[in-house]
Image (cartoon, rainbow, N blue to C red; front, side, top):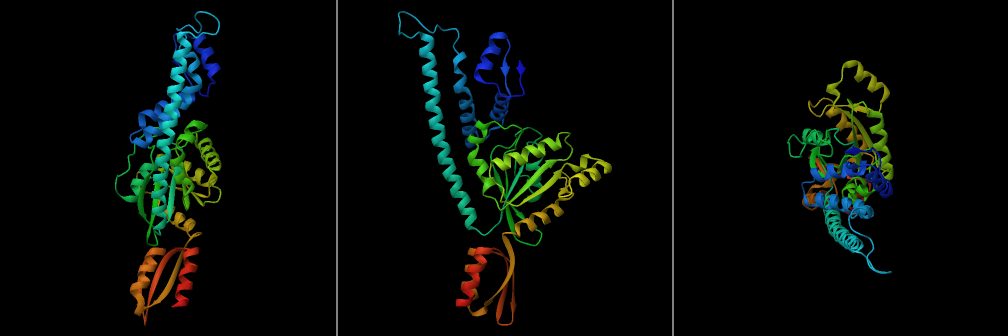
Amino acid sequence: MVIFDLELSPGQQKNLEKALPKIKIVDRTRLILDIFAQRARTSEGSLQVELAQLSYMLPRLTGAWRAFSQQAGGIGTRGPGERKLEYERRHIQYRIKHLRAELARVRASRRLRRSLRASVPVPQVALVGYTNVGKSTLLNALTGVPSAYADDKLFATLDPTARRVRLPSGGWAIVTDTVGFIQRLPTSLIAAFRSTLEEVEAADCLLLLHDASSPELEGQHASVKLTLEELATGGIPQVEALNKSDRLDAASRNDLSRRHPDTTLISAASGNGIPAMLARVEEALSKRWLLREIDAPAASAGSWTARLYESAQILDRRVVGDKIRFRLRVTAENWRRLQSLLVEC
């Protein structure tokens, strides 16, 4: 087997197979697709991987039936090889169409679940980063329960996993673990995993996780930033953390802190630095989710409580004279609406 760390065109692959007839030729995209196929555990993940595989295979069918003749009989007739090739191409095109329809239904279902989550007044945080930097391990550390699958493998997580995480000043945020990025991510994978990557675009804050112990840290950091730019996430606040700091000595940690002053050194395995990271996440969320207090008449506390739970996250409530003071985490739009309702009362 020969593996190329680049994407080969169909013509290049065909020429290489002719030059090396007894050797399997694998390019970067095919290798990534093979890894994805091994990691897919859910029906959605399997659909996405199959769509990416077939999109990769379709333009490469020309060399698949070299053993069959391409012409037979008189002028204008087609040989068995050409018919077989057309059957295969038509079957793959039909399957791609079917998979896209299935994924469109999955996308609609995910959009519905996302809208339901958005209707609940809880901030959304997307956990993103290069593959195998410890995102699932961090999610388990944040929740205190090993509910997300975590393993020391490339692309161990293909499907987004959402969990509720308590914030330092009270209340909750929904943290979603997403598929890991990689340098020169194939465009077919970006297209196939579009519904998954939409979780990143819909977040209130992006928590970017990097592997502090990786010798390729700078290249991985640049790759993650480039992928986020392609996803049009420029307007979403970002918080960066360097994971696996427990694998470094004190001098290396100090050097990383000096070169990346805007990041937080953490260890998802030991828990070190996680409180400081969460504080930064909460600060980033405060740009959209405001911490406010509002006094409601005690006589109408019941109806007000229902309205507040529909529009805000109640962190605390206490009686102050003839009023009930609510401490909230609320978006700016809902805060203006609640203030106008209070004036009307």
